[in-house]
Each structure stands twice: as C-alpha cells, then as structure tokens.
Image (cartoon, rainbow, N blue to C red; front, side, top):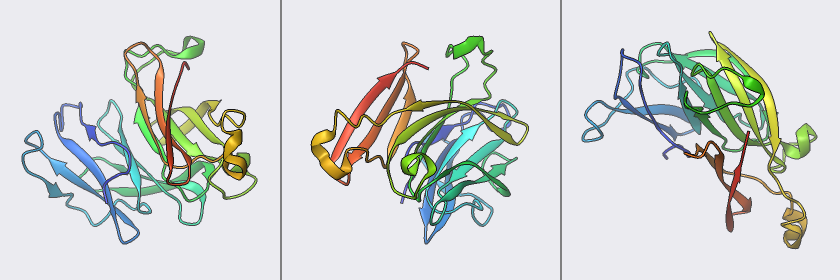
Length: 212
C-alpha cells in the first residue's frame, strides 16, 4: 500500500526535484522514487526503511530525509534517516510520543509559514498528527492531537501540542465520540493548518482548520 498520507518532493540540491512516495508491504516500509516528475518509478536501493509498515517522510534543509513509522502494537515512533535522498535508510532510536498502532501524518512546515511564540522558521520544523490513546492511558485510537516539533541534527523535539478531538461535537457517536484514527495534515496559504481525519471507524471523515 501507499502511505497512507503524502509523499515529498525533495528541495535540497543533492536530489532536488526527486519525488519520494512512502509505501508498506508485509509489515515493512519502503520508498518509491521518481527522478523524472513521476513518469517512471523504482524502489529505493536499500532493503527497507527500518520502520514498521505505514510511514511518512520529511526532509531537512541539509538533505536528510527522516522516516516516521507506525509502532507495532503501539509505543514510541520508529524513526530512521536517509543521507542519500531516500535510497537507503539507517535506524535511529524511537521517539516520543507513545501512540497506539495507527497511521499518523507527518509533514514539513514550509519556511514561509509564521510560527507561534516568535519561533524563527529555518525549515527544521515539522507537524505530527496522531491518536494518543486517551492521552497515553491506553492503546486505543482516541483523542487525536497535533504536535509541533523540530529536528536538530538527528534529534526530534516536540514543542507544542494541540488537542483535536471534539467530544461534544461528536457526542452522537456515543462510544466513538473521542475516536481518532487516520489523518492527513497540510499547511494552508493563510498560515493555518488543515487536517483531514477519521472521526468514526471506517465511516466518517472530517476536516479541521486551526492556527498554531
């Protein structure tokens, strides 16, 4: 399968214009690569991304590509990095937050995006959308949150957290009022964040828009 989520078009001069599409197969992750604007595709040269199945990619200004995976059974986020434009990946230590086994969306924050608290946007900021299992109390697909983070070197640090799940709005869903599963983030032209997410098991998609 592809993603789920989005692919990335690399900007660093080393691999500028290369398109990476994250995929998963048999509980492993890989990357499909196109160097001709999507006309032809091939697999990355390495074995796999050293992550667990569904994954998402972000690129840093120095050209490193980070792959955030889905933890089998839940837990910290599997993380790996590529130094060669997505051809090969090496495993890094898993990072917070701990989440249930569920797809998450991870994207770059564009450098033109104005960040909160007078943070200087140097292209190293990312957004993560994930279910948190009642805030870390269990491994259920509940209580969605968006995390604003930053990658320095190969270290991921989360700076701010935004609550997404609206229990009152979805009270009619009864036991699924705080359900949160698959999602897809984007940064909007008006400096807001757009989020498409699954608010009911395989039956209801909703769109949220908010400011950081």
